[in-house]
Length: 230
Image 1 (tube, rainbow, N blue to C red):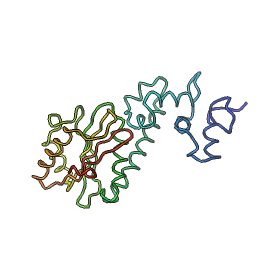
Image 2 (cartoon, rainbow, N blue to C red):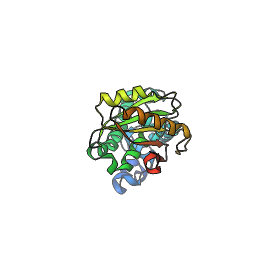
Image 3 (cartoon, rainbow, N blue to C red):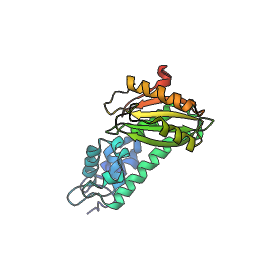
Image 4 (cartoon, rainbow, N blue to C red):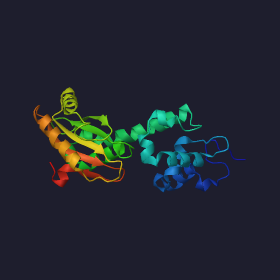
């Protein structure tokens, strides 16, 4: 009898097991569930690995939600041990760093789509609003990404002094402001526009330029610069 420890879910024909399917047809042929099953390798007692993978995706709202899950959230999944949690966390961090790499190597303005993709991955699936900064050097390459505030993003909850302090700490020449809309609508609100004006004024006092304010959802991104709002 074929062992299912490495090859895949017991009882499945080899041609539909994730590993064999990947080797035969390439990784793009695999579903999200199959890719995650490959990472997990084994299931639990009474639950094959594909079933476990699907339950994880359902619990976190797909791969994007899993990418944004932290260690404490992964701990809540019954049967997901330390080794599997560590593997998931490592792969997700690799994905985040891969998306950040072009921003560190090239001027952000030369690749605005890379910035949008990076921010959607970081923030797009959050259930609450998060305000963040892309801090850039004089060549507009990424120095650091920092999440600063959580909750409703407006002038009352985002403190210009903190934003200025983080820019000075990193010796940033420019920044891109960013936050998410959990509603799924990426269009900037009047509160977003008022906040942007306030932060532009505060950062200008210390010689830091605001290049853009990007609002993201799971599926979309809206750029203040591209909309002519800066």
